[in-house]
Length: 553
Ligand code: NOJ
Image (cartoon, rainbow, N blue to C red; front, side, top):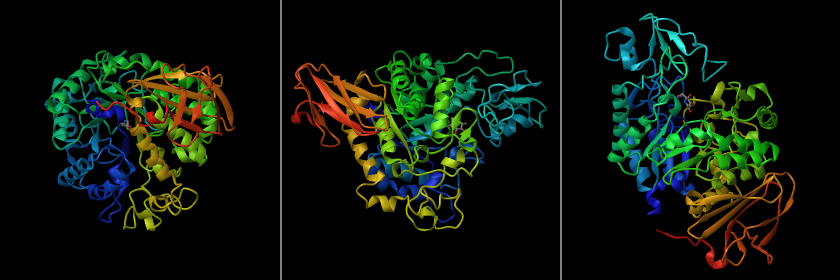
């Protein structure tokens, strides 16, 4: 039964078809290329793939501007290739999640074209219009510095249309029942083609009231219940993973108090304080963020991530905390974006320090929730700051030291490969790391195995244990009488810590499931442990016979 809620203990791998593997030499990744890399992903141990948008699109926001929800963009292949891919993934026990971008369409979507061409069109009311320019047109921009307004005059109809994001992404009028019905139809289509659910883009905007006179938008949370019900009627184990960077007190509205809304959300709150902890060796805000987000319905789950395809958004940290992260990880202006974040990949942010990288990923695999990795993280890929906005961290996957990193046989990759320097494909690639037993790739594979063997993290109750040192985070998970203890040292120096688990009924032994550093408690269940700079430990409580012990049902 525990595996029925598969997403509680999944390991999700996020990739863009466009930049993963090109099979036909046109420089653009495609489904046939991805299909050939399925064994690689299965070997890594991931249990779900999240595909970034691959539907037909003019590609002005990397596919987050869809012009046909029911088709694969021809540059990536056909619907036939897509189904072959989902079938291949299923054969290897890997589920597929796809992006669902329904807050807005592309301005080249036929619905919008019709809506702007004819005010009496049935699609007119699928978008959000105003005769005059609303007073708040220069407020609420998601991409400040790049986006000029949230209302743009449509030269065809002479009226203004609302767009929360770029002007080529007109917002759908999601309150319109016809639009809602279409969203269900889109979900039903892809579910039928083999996906296990959706990463839903921009959820707070999807459910927000939209319009020229709206000052304080109401939120239509019931829409989320309707999405979930529909999905579960069609395919019981399908889920929605929400992109919703909201304050913790709103979380339960998204999950639903009885778990009747969305199954998963990304934990942006923990993400930001995690970066603060990495920057300052102060884990107190992180522990607070964990407490603030610990309440979940039984069927709910967090998506835990480090860096994603967007900027690292630090907007919810205090000013001092934000400045600490900027100065540690993104001090230069060209590393920063949209007045709130850092656009770099993780490896260069951490100065390529393998100890810190492993610390960060160990945290990602062990914080409460389900880890979501990003392609290239498993080999420590870097970024190219000469590329605009978020493209710097979206360069093609580095497979080998062959020309174009083995990504394409063609001459012109869709985005340039990172070449030369410490992160160039000549040095950082899968082929090299595959045969090096100490590589990041092989370490990642091992950590994924550890995560899968510790379902306590996905299901259990997490308590942060105090050890008097704010630079050390001790998490104790308990589930079905199994106890897992995970410790991280954020200091750049060795530390000696003491803590007590007060375990009832076990012999006070902590078995190290990663290395050979078991710890036997003293009479009062006190453990005394020395951790290396940026060191971490994964323990299972009990005697040796407790190793791997867990309930299966
Ligand atoms: C959030 C996505 O993560 C981002 O990449 C995109 O630009 C916006 N939503 C608009 O769809």
